[in-house]
Length: 566
Image (tube, rainbow, N blue to C red; front, side, top):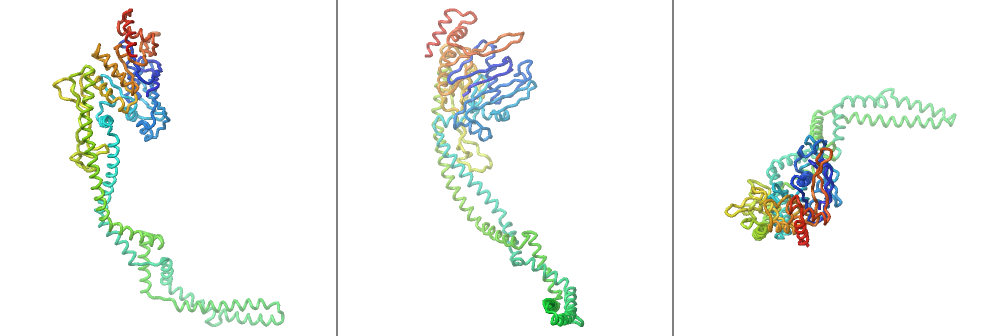
């Protein structure tokens, strides 16, 4: 519901705050007073194109702000949540238009775009004028209207859930097929990598052992020479270190016999000699065991290079190499089972497609039945609005199937979340004419009444919380005007209505009456809007009936119109 509309510097309106209530709100006023400016301002916050001529002469910018009350669980809340815009039940939409034509938009304080505003528009407000309607002339909304009229929403949602499952299976099949196409090449590559590891068959930590052995083999002569020389100098040669230590140990022992305090030192010298003897023998054994085989060095080099190649690709240690070998085996096992998985998915797809096709066909049949009843209901409404010769068709046709798509077609129609149907409201205003889409009706008055008839029939079904009727009474008078007014009043029992009219028969049926007027101050013309009391309503209706000079007869007729609505 639209609670407040604040308008600043829009054409002739300098500053105006309009507070609307639930039910039937009507705006009246003399021609040229500025009634349509209110609708133009509302259109701005609904994403209409910003024009420089919307800005009041002399002002730097125009601004319009609308406060909407949003119902819990509505589509508006869902769209706001998807856009990351918080909403606690109140929605403030603000549009600023600069004199040079640039504009900025804000939704609950968050910067938005005109496109985003337009996406919210059909769920917030539907404007019907002689030139446009935000949602009812848009064929993309007609299927939802038809389903709401026929109470088919639950069936559509059930079908949508099945279609989502089917789409998931189809996407998985595409993924598996893609993998199957490259499976042989992938399998060969993985098998090659696994063979490369298995043929080398490294052991844990082998990279360290190979590095050590490789170093020994490459420097064998140097190691043998150094260790043998060390062994000779320590123990195996002439005048060795161990021989000299033996003499020193003997001398210290002799001294310790004289002074017992030297005994510990004698033992240290002897211990050092004994350890050096052991070291010399170990060095001798090492020197004797040094292998100088070029064949063995070649073998170690070859294995070391092969292992390093694997470690560079899958390492850096044998621990990671073993883990990767396990992954290779697992991937090869999965590839081997891809054919079985594809067969399983195809079976699941066929079962789901059978269920989806049955649901889609059943829903399509019910839509066609509901379309006949809806067309009859709209036709009856049009007859009451003075268009008795109009013919209405609610066209239900298959959705054209594309050349290729994720989902299979059903009976030649493309399958969507909503089924296999597209819906469009068609009307032939006059006898002998072919039905045409609503948006192509040439006469503004006929379009306005056609939209009113639709809204009358679908008053409880449409998504928009506010219906705006901008001079839908054009070209009618008398009894037809009263019928139009009562139709609008009936819509207002289900939706908030804002109506601009020149006819007293319609204005008298409103719950809340606003008048638009003009005043001149300091050489500037300004439009204003004010709420009328019951007494003021009599005068305004009398003006609409009698013209410039309001007499007792006009007042009496106005009071009669007001009393007739109760």
